[in-house]
Length: 300
Image (tube, rainbow, N blue to C red; front, side, top):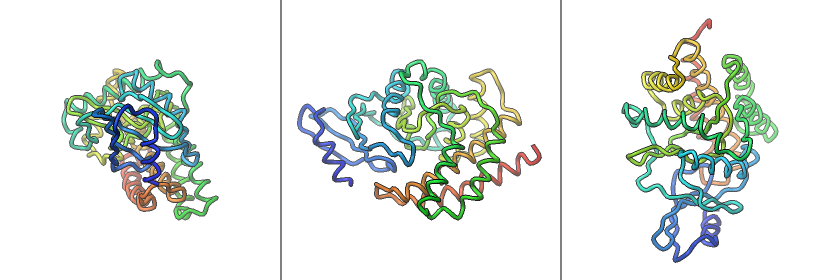
């Protein structure tokens, strides 16, 4: 499949001169390449619609263009069926927990998230999808049950937990979120942060983005609380028991989604990646997050 994707890159009519193509490692949803076109570098993502994951490229293209106009993301320079060509960010490296331990870096990243949540919709030329993760979790569970996936035995418990967490979250004020803030989707170039890969961009509670990032980066409790405090201050608020409880519930929900994403990916795999192991890893993380949620907010 990787060789087929490479051929697709080489055959694109976007290039101007001699082209060299290099694999970019780390992608688990798409094939990613660094292309040198007569000395000019670009990043190319190869991937079709993935209905099992509710990923439709026309949505991703519209959101990606809006994200660039809002100053969040590198430019989308060209797209054609199954392929997107992006501006290359020199010195861009995936973020890690150590980055957020620095006060100035955390301020920049939280500011960028606030910009995403409030400014991006003004540049969006389509309504944009709703990313209601509880519904997506139920949909993943149905797919796994229908196809006899390996995670089927865990679904009754996971869906009961999903319902519990949805009740704990309660009503939300939707903003436009990235919804997949794993380490590889946040780049730091030494001057600023960039958000990339908008496959799941859509309307959601802003705290979901923070909780998703905290869950994937495995942030310390103190860093999580400081991140929450700085984000809420964008709206002149301070963390309280209710906001901390909702943040913790969102964190558990994001881990359910990621575990089930791995379970679905195992059945529809198109990359050389161990989706089953990925799903099991996030189930283990979920157990720890749920234990903390219940210990911290028992009776609330």
